[in-house]
Figure 1: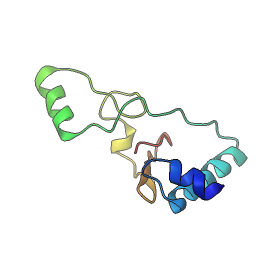
Figure 2: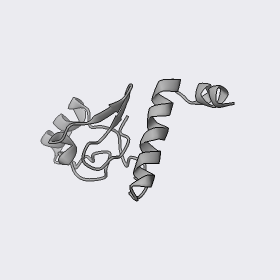
Figure 3: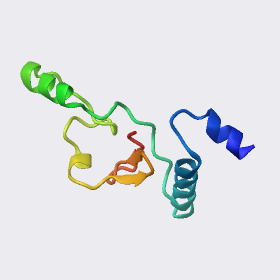
Figure 4: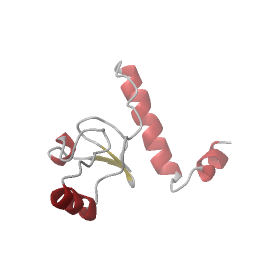
Length: 92
């Protein structure tokens, strides 16, 4: 049943899924609230350049304007899944 569930998830393997589930269990045991889903994708170089040239504000996954604390702290990885080291939001 678990293997079927993980196979139905896009771009996820069993190790990544287990890592995310264990991370959520530890955070819940520590009394941390569930992080919200990302507000935006990680800004790409073209997005950053567009912001510089047009003045358009681009958002980080946490919803803050670029650059936010994610740029200054190390990300945490579970396989290919990235979590912001500052706000804990899954960013990819």
